[in-house]
Every structure is written in C-alpha cells, then in structure tokens.
Length: 280
Ligand SMILES: NC(=O)c1ccc[n+]([C@@H]2O[C@H](COP(=O)([O-])OP(=O)(O)OC[C@H]3O[C@@H](n4cnc5c(N)ncnc54)[C@H](O)[C@@H]3O)[C@@H](O)[C@H]2O)c1
Image (cartoon, rainbow, N blue to C red; front, side):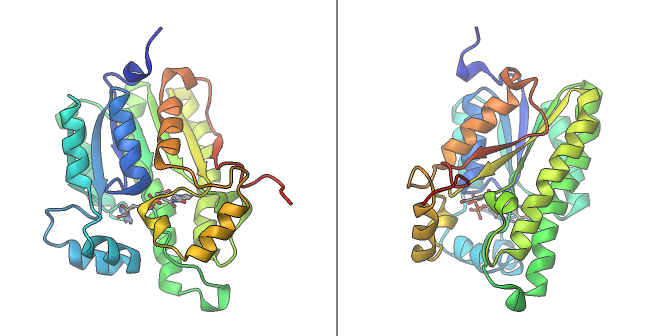
C-alpha cells in the first residue's frame, strides 16, 4: 500500500493563483504528496510590474502587493527543498496566449502536465446589485470562470494524449447557496460547478477526472482582511463554529488527484465545516 507522501509521486501539477492562501497550501500539499509543482500567479515577488498589475486587479491585490503578502518564489523554493522540481512564473489566467506559453514550457521542461488546480479567484467586494460595479462583474467572470476555461482548454491536449489527468476547480458555497451582495462572485462559482460536470463527462473517455472543491469559510490572508463582523456571522452559521484552514482544502485536493479517487468525477466536494447545513 502506498503512503500519503508517495500518492502523487512522478506527477506534475500546475496551480493557478498560488502566491498565497489556498493556492499556496495546495501547491505545498501536492509537493508533499510527491508531485513536482509549478506556481503561477499574477503576482510574483521579483516582478517589477507587480505594482501595475495589482492596480489593474483591484484593492485586495494592491494591499497584498504593497504589504508583500506574495510568496510565489518562496513557495517554489520550499518545494525544491523537499526534493521536488518547482518554479514560479507570472501567469494571468485571463491571458490565453500567456497560459498556452506557460503550459508549453512546463510540458517541455517537466515532460508532462498531470494535475491542474484552477484556484485563481477574486473575492474582494460585497455589494448589492444596484451598487455592483460593472467592471468588477466583468473581471470576476473573466478571472474566476473564463480563467478556468482557458487553463482547462490549454491542458486538455496534454492530458488527453497521455490518457491521464486530474483537474480541480475551486468553487465556493457562494456557488451552491448564493451569496448576499455577491452577484458576480456567486455566479462564477455556480458556473464552475456546471463547467466541472460537463468537463467530467468529456474527460471520462480520456482518463481525465474533473472535480470541484466547494470551500466554506477558510482562514486565508484574504479572509483575515475582510470585515470582522461579517466573518463572525459566517463562522456562527458554520456547524464547527470556526473557519477551516487552507490545508483542509489542500488535503482534499491531494485525495481527489490520487488514484485512490479514480472513480470520482464531476463532483463538488464540500470542505465547508457544515456551513450549508440547517442550523438554528
Ligand atoms: N478563503 C475562503 O474563505 C474561500 C471560500 C470559498 C472559495 N474560495 C476560493 O478559493 C480560491 C483561493 O482563495 P483565497 O482565500 O486563497 O484567496 P486569495 O485572494 O488570497 O488568492 C487568490 C489568488 O489568485 C490570484 N489571482 C487573482 N487574479 C488572478 C489572475 N487573473 N490570474 C492568476 N492569478 C490571479 C491572486 O493574486 C491570489 O494569489 C479562490 O478561487 C476563492 O474564490 C476561498
């Protein structure tokens, strides 16, 4: 029987939006399980254009960039120290050509792409429909939904050719339950669940399993910067009465990417502490 740290030995993974939070935890856990991991994000420590890019992507990116909560190269180094191959590279999931170039480079340098985690996302505003900024609506669709489409389309030929692949899409309970003041965010996260099912159907004949994770409230740097009163209300409706850790998501991803989950495809796995359960 294989042990946990050998589950993904020899596999090559790409994680999007991995410079902090859940994406970073996913990358580290995949590496601990034996995979080589490529860290991709719009923000990379040594990139001189980071300030400009952060400005384009909104307030949360700006705060993270200016306070140096950007750990893409650091994460790649930590993975190398585990004895795995890794590098960090700037990749905007909305830029189709850039995505294709990065994937081609990974295939060329690492020999395959076996796992894709579509984690990049924007969760930085809450506003009711009258105040929903149109540019944020467009941005959320582009990053959260079209970004996952761009990366899935780019990786598909590689996975199809090798007859094995695992794609994980990062949804949210906002996608299954809706979210007050989250018109754009919840629409993209709901869309990702339907996208997951359609890709699972297409992937089954090629050995490509496609699943989604449905996180509840997870204590990432981004979560900690959100309005504390709102966070308290969300925690109070979670069965466990506490937020999850990024590692809770990462562990579920390692399982879904392993052959232990080979008969699982097209699901949205709640890793939510029971936030969707009826409570009173
Ligand atoms: N934290 C939670 O409570 C929670 C709950 C449900 C779902 N999620 C989802 O999990 C994922 C990660 O959440 P997090 O809390 O770590 O958020 P986060 O904001 O810390 O991380 C998102 C990452 O995506 C990157 N990113 C943004 N736009 C990008 C683009 N165009 N191309 C590439 N990278 C881009 C950001 O730079 C950042 O590193 C998101 O998809 C989010 O919607 C989080």
